[in-house]
Amino acid sequence: MQTATPRFSQGADAQGQFGTFGGRFVAESLMPLILELEQAFNTAMAEPGFLAELDRFQAEFVGRPSPLYFAERLTALYGGAKIYFKREELNHTGAHKINNCIGQILLARRMGKTRIIAETGAGMHGVATATVAARFGLQCVVYMGATDIERQRDNVARMRLLGAEIVPVTSGTGTLKDAMNEALRDWVTNIDDTFYLIGTVAGPHPYPTMVREFQAVIGRETRQQMLDREGRLPDSLVACIGGGSNAMGLFHAFLDDATVRMIGVEAAGEGLKSGKHAASLKGGFAGVLHGNRTYLLQDDDGQITDAHSISAGLDYPGIGPEHAWLHEQGRVEYTAIDDKQALEAFHTCCRQEGIIPALETAHALAEVSRLAPQLPADHLMVVCLSGRGDKDMPTVLRLMEEQA
Image (tube, rainbow, N blue to C red):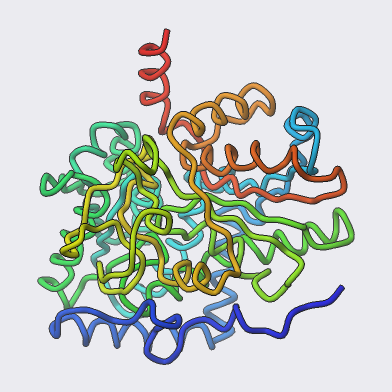
């Protein structure tokens, strides 16, 4: 099998830029914290002891490796590609988020931080953060938009049971963007004891690189599992994208394999033409938000516009800067799925495979339903099941009642 000259996996440069994207656009007061974090991360990743500790917690606490599962009934239904699920929803706490959280909490302990803050939208990152903070006996504060608190009550209860303080954010639309704004303000105010545990491949450098490195275990496992199972690499990879951590985690191990097609799936909400969506690449343009330059939903004056998705975890007006770079390089394809298509795919997965996926994951599954029938039976497709759907049942049941 021919492999492209390594290029796409090279990552950010010394300034944290992926081409023209990424970087560190932060207040002067934040820069010492960012530089301290970068140094601590680089040092830790070069130490075998840290990596061994990370591997141990991934195995014994998170439950890795996650299974690679042949979706036999879904494959038969679509009549095309052979579909595999990378089962991240089987991780402790029910999503891929714990991979990153366990890495960052180990880093926070090395840095002597005693207070953990985080932002969350769908609540899965908040739950994972509260989980690791409880495990290591650290204070935990989670910023969550008031809108998301209402639609993710179960996850709010889980965070509180784990000892986290939930701070409702009522500014803006009361969703993930606004929660991240408040978390950044907290970090500047509490510089001595606080570690900001960002949940996606966004934010100022080194966060996009750091989160991707902690999530890259998804792709490394998938690569080996496919070689063991099929004797070759997959032909295509599919993952949903809000900020994009589960997708970068899956894609990174394959970026330099020219034969592997990769598809990232944004949330088209009520439709790209409606203005009510969260598809930054399909409906936005480059700008700066939360410390990095990337594609954003914004008006002609550069003001950030509201995002919309049936899925709280995709309801963000930006995308990770590495995704923006991969989009412009043409290495990864990016599509968009609307709320209706995602909900249909959600029900199909439930009934065909006995797996209740997160609404985020349902966007990727809807793209699979479009692609798989067009492909030959020997085409190997892997979709990242980034989370389970327990948290989304109130939303799904409400929509079912409205449609009845």
